[in-house]
Image: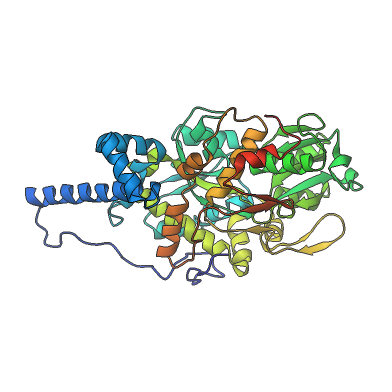
Length: 465
């Protein structure tokens, strides 16, 4: 959970959301009303050049881990311009420079379009609209735009039909690598939600106890490049079931899953909510296992945008980034979840019964097996995009044949998952980000060390490499 929450002045009315930093914090560079002289312009240019050089120097020092001898030898050997070219291939320098520009500048665009899929994983992205968080950051006229499925979201984002998007956390990695689509550099500034998925089975399978009982099943997942796909495959394989040979896994948009379960086209699915809870609500399925039982605190969905948007519209990018961090912090508080359910359940957002959305967000729910469960972290919210999570995702993309050959795990993880930038935003807003961007994770009792990805991959018996 995130430490400090924004002002709750809107609670009970779902009208607006303000935080302790509300107010005009812009810096006026010219209050006299006169036009700037050429000297002012040159001074501005000089200041920006100095800032750029400072950023370059800081990046070099980080890359060389403070080893001045090695740094100087490298610079002397290749020269400054070649050094910058080499470093730019390893680190998004242009993005860093744009990020460091004056945050008090005018927004380049205020009427952003933000694509989303109608699932509870998108809670911060969606609720920021009816609760006025986008508007608070100057993004007047911005709107959230509902898509039918992940392929549509991907195409909208690549074709610039939306400025930012709710994505599955593996998607920006795949897009940046050109896996499954045209190669387009994308950034993932923030995680949208943790946990929030489940394996749901048709009611006829209430006697199922383990993966071995699932041989021959037909499952659905929302997209190839999804935590749903990778977690389902992981769970099956750990139980001795080959996900490419012993079962069928279909890609299906989440809103279509319940109907297909009802029509007996599926035996089950690993899906985002509210469609696990909706299957219970419709009395066509039961919640077999929450995804947090496989990996507690796993990433699910994310806020993403193209590198082009972030670098060409840095002030608008920072504004929407701030809004998402605020919305995520508010969503993290369990006492706010009922208000949020009221805000996002309507037809233009999730189009679900409020009680279904509330059951997911509060973690107080019927599981379809006759039990009422209280799981406050059934879904959770924290924006920090751990680089180690990106490395795990990349290992699974390679494990199951989506990526071939060598993978530069660290480079790709740090290029796409903007952990440092998110930590900066969190600190500015009074939250407490982690001090590191890598940590070990435990998935189904097995430890993952992000610094030893190939060793981890080689430890699996069932894989498709």
